[in-house]
Each structure stands twice: as C-alpha cells, then as structure tokens.
Length: 226
Image 1 (cartoon, rainbow, N blue to C red):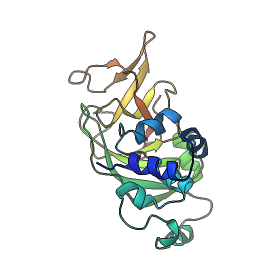
Image 2 (image 1 turned 90 degrees about the horizontal axis):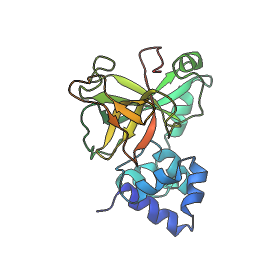
Image 3 (image 1 turned 45 degrees about the vertical axis):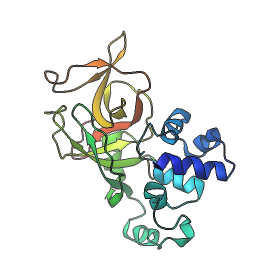
C-alpha cells in the first residue's frame, strides 16, 4: 500500500536527494525521516516542511491525489498573508487526534483545517519563546489517560521542533501504537512514559525507537508543563 512515506522516498530519490540531505534541509531528524519512509509512521506534523523541500504539493504528499506540482495548486497563501497581521503568530490546527489512552493507530491523515493567530506575547508566555513559522501546531487530545491534567477534546499546542527528550514534561510521541499524548519523566534508571491516570495506565520505561513529535502545551492555559 502506498503511504506518505512511500511518496516522500520516491520523490526524494527521483530528485537525487540523499536522506541525510533532506533531513538537513527540513530540520527533521534522520531517524524520524527514515521511520516515515519505511512506513513505521503514518504521518508527521512536518509535512509542509517536507513538501516545500521537495517542491511538491502538501495535499499530494498527504493523499496521493491532486496535482503534484505546487505550481498547479490553487493560490491560497495570499489570503492567509492578508488575514494575518504581520506581528502575529499563525498556528495551524490539524484535523487529527492524538490518543490519550493505551494507544491507537490513526489511519486518517491530518489535514490543516484552519489557522489561528496569537500575539507573540501569548506564545512566549506559553512556550517560552517565539518560534519560526510552522513550528507550532494545534492538535486535539482524546482518551482518558491524562485526566485531569488534559481532558478529552482540549486543544493542545505542540512545539514540533522538540524531537528528543527535553526534560520532564508532556510530549506528542509514538511508541509503536500510534500518536499519543503522554508525560515523560526521567526517573534516574530510565525515562518513563507516564499517564496522569496512573491506576488504569501504569508508567513504563520509554521503549527503544520511540519517536517524539513535539512537546505539548495546553493552548487555553498559560502553565508550561514542567
């Protein structure tokens, strides 16, 4: 079955681009890109960056449908540029859930359904700094493992620039069972995957090969998860 990773690999190879070169161009970890290309990941929050680096349509990369060339896509970026004040930060909302249970594979490819504009002061109060465009995304949590810290349906701001353990906090990760929202804690002997609902979801050492897709913040709270 053709996947996003299949299209990324085929397009990369057709242009004579080495995987390490694409990783360098996009700022995506080599191991993350490798996992995507071999089908271990269904999708990634950085498809726009990959599409831009390869010069192809993000929609085509996601679905395999529509024109591959960005030159054939309807022009929509000008509308977003006009609607967004130059001193505001636009954060895209992805139409894709992140599981907060025991893990489930989301077969739906996340599509950008809307963008939200935030004042830089607000972004700085949540994340601690103002990142470059495209680094922050919004996802929706589902499941009960992070109650009461995160309730199902809450919007979560994800800093996709964090691709490795960056201190105790809440992360978007994939331990092999699909996208999940879980806390990571360094307990000395290992980094543990921890749920707020520890009775139903006991903590366990982070499995080797776990992919970290970003660090998570609640959009409607100013608290940073540390």
